Image (tube, rainbow, N blue to C red):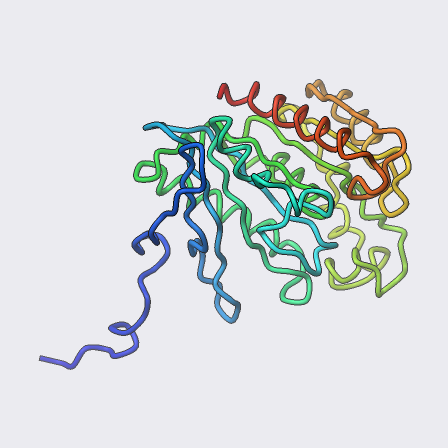
Length: 287
């Protein structure tokens, strides 16, 4: 009998069949699975997600969270500058409301250029759907929610016509048009695209939610600071207008006095934006 291939013997199980790590209680009946691998990408780090599951047997609707960081940095455990110190965390708060929460890794622009990031989100959603039975998830009731660069990717995932089960998108202060006339090779957009947007206009268009709007897209909730000095509020207003033009329900909330990442906003108003976003998401999925 031939000897087994040692590499295949010692390799870790594929994420599709690997045992889940132990979960830990985090209060209000919520359980947390931290650092669950969902994809193996050749030549890249393992991609992982954190999963908060509500109390009760389920199946639970899902909120898929996408972190920001100019596509260059950031971490799945961070929902933005103003929410980092919240206790309970925003993730736990969403789960306590009855929705499962998956916060996912994706390859940053220093690791791979677009569309790798969108491919990773597709992979995370596929994994969650494939293992929905053992996790008591109903991924046919999914809202994708992202802030800044994560909001950009969340919008693209919701607008993708080959993804089924996403019933809404919450997008906070996200770039929606990557500017095909931009010529700065060092901008975050250029680092994402692999070249200045003006040099790769077709790729810039594919990476711009404004240019990917289609009839039949799920509803959107857009929240953006009126005083955003990093991503102008016109990114939200233009996307809202384009969505409405094709008949997609859209709610636009422009927040007076707020800069990027809700900087400069009183804590009570940050809480208000979060609560309104969560209420809207829960209405979409029925939790």
